[in-house]
Length: 307
Image (cartoon, rainbow, N blue to C red):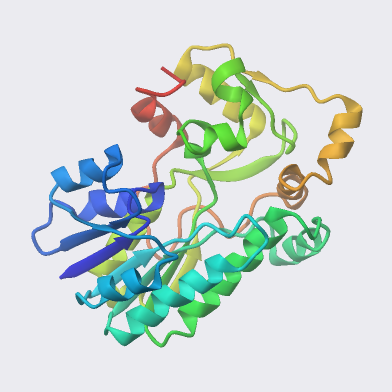
């Protein structure tokens, strides 16, 4: 069985590749922009076939899919410029999958926060120029592209990634003071709860779906490993690193300004809605073991600011 994994060096896809790479039943193909990256080289050493390409190159997408695949996993990070290139790229992927007879399409999306009613109310208040106002809208649009494809699909919706706190490419963009000053600056407030998970656990569900396609056919679901407050996250970082991690103390004027900031306003939204009551371990798939936050931090601190 041939499986194509797009965004193959990202944290979602890594769990899928890890779950299937040693099973001789599956031929894995990794689509990545940089075959010379350390992550891509590791995949090649593990026996994964590397395909160089970018979501924006429609010709390469077409050539890739013409090789014929049984299952395709993809996720696309929303356009940060305010455009819709992410949605167009998703359409290119899905259209190619349909044209070339892909049997199963798997999409790594994003979980809603709070109840649907609370989410709709709070989302409407986010600044219209906010990246995060568009983030969920674009995720939903791509979900609709997948649903309307006519292919058997599975949509997996993870919450906040623990990787955001540690990994290069994540932490310096979201929590820039954390690796250098050991200060966690989060506009959610210290005692606001939210779902957290290991992003690569998306791949566990995707692998299970590939192994049991009928069971996961046309299913979509959120998941989360733990509900944690920002204060609890700080304690876990202290435990894992042995460093004196501190919460940022917001001056009153800066706190007010953060409510309309394009990024920080979303943290206020998460705090206001609370955790999604439908999060946690999906009851339909109880055998999928989710990674605890402590476990992930302990197993992945080598070579990071935690060490």
